[in-house]
Amino acid sequence: MAKQLSQREMDYPDKLLEYLNGFRFSKVIFSACELGVFDLLLTSQEPLSAQQVAQELSASADGMERLMDTLVGLQILDVETTNATALYSNTDLASRYLAKGSPRSLWNMIIYFSQSLYPLWSGLGDTVRAGKNQNEKNFGIPTEDVFHAIFRTEEEMVKFLGLMDSTWAMDGLHIVRAFDLSCFQKVVDVGGCTGALAREVAKAYPSSSVTVFDLPQTVEMVQKHFARDDTVMFQPGDFFTDDIPPADLYILARIIHDWPEEKGLKLLKKIYDTCKTGGGVLLVEALLLENRRGPVLAQVFSLNMMIQTEGRERHPSDYIQMLNKVGFLNVQVSRTEKTYDAILALK
Image (tube, rainbow, N blue to C red; front, top):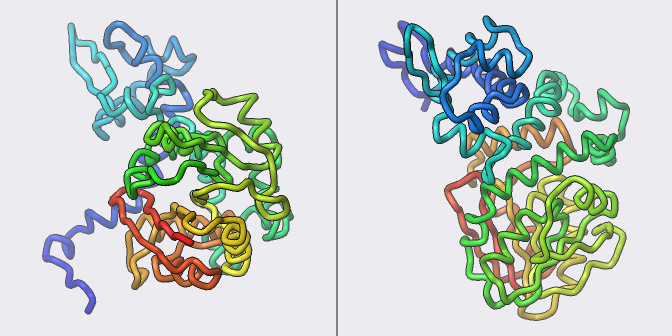
């Protein structure tokens, strides 16, 4: 049954207007990150005026004041008035997640959203109408080769890897706590990008050896652009065409959702055949509800998969059926109540 509008909603559609203006709010935050506002305020010894920030960042004083006042309205910056001058500083939220220099920074994710996803999402209507992702439409790259679009230049590849690095710096801890993985001594993160999730696994289970298995060009870019440590090893290879390294546990984080079912089954079967009895696979995905009516972020992600790839988000039963088809029968699902959930399947 459709939800009945309240009298307030009938008189004025506040929530709808909030949604309609959402792209503006996003772009305010994106632009402040790109300009370096949060980093400047983080390193400053005292609150700064809009004019000081504008001068430091080579921007107009009027434009910077409007931008920073909007960030105050969004409760991302704080402001105080001293001698008739507005002085701005980061909130704890901004310092922790929006400044590039913070260990928990989402800056890389935001840059990818702003410079790569934002333009693609302007073509959502065309994607829905034609059923073709925007990379195919914009760059003439066949649907099955969408990752050649994501990795078409070194700059785009680094932005994508930065997105994944930010993602697991934020969500990795919740994933490694979803199940007790202490029984797995050798772990391979298949398609593990920068190793951010793998490092969380190594930190939580220091007695386990953890290896990232990813494309040679990915490993090269990680070595060139991202900080690494000796807790995680890297092995180059294509998980569709090369032999997958032996392990007790295979992690597939945001991998299966990239592909149609038949391709996902091919990869899962390859892992099942490589996996020894007692070993397993850990899927990390944004799980839809069984009726596909939420969570709304997972629904938005599913649209994003249509825009960028040939994949989709799925509900738990979809993944369980896929795992069962290739031979994994002992399957457990953990909803983390964060962005990504986990499914552990044992052989």
